[in-house]
Length: 225
Image 1 (cartoon, rainbow, N blue to C red):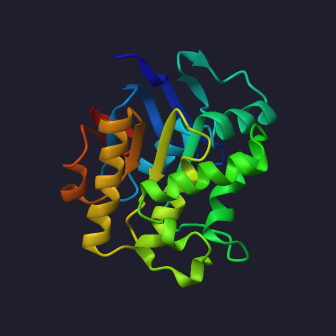
Image 2 (cartoon, one colour):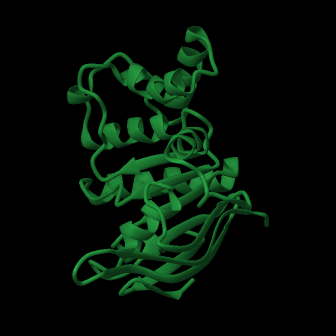
């Protein structure tokens, strides 16, 4: 299995009078089409690790490689472009823009990337929504949706630019158990049926059991991968 994401001796230290080590000497390889959970106690560094993998933060030492390409030398503009083209993000809060319809929200990353015509963007957004059972909600505003529907819309938006890796930070934190299970089944389907790489932070051991592999982190150190 070829690697989608790799880290080599990756460390993140917050500078200050008393430096704080968030992640220490992380060595990981996440394959294409893998569905991986990052688990660990509260405050262990799960989200910090995800943000480093998603190029939202930079390591103090070591490196992050996307498709075996080193990213540490890239400038902020290049990183932003790489995130837009290669990475999709889903968070605990859906962050759908209330002034836009669901369809328009899903089209936002495509507009930023600028590769498709308006008609092509709309067609693709509708296809993504349909694949998640959301085509009937396309014209609605986010406030008209249930929590589970909002998160599915957020997943569709994260997939808008066909990302190499989908990263999710506690995506079920605001959902009931049924909707949480549904979201994880969507992720598993993306990995197993479409070859999508999915990395998700979760504190719920019952949900992490639905993934292919768990990366367990304690006090900033990976103790099991």
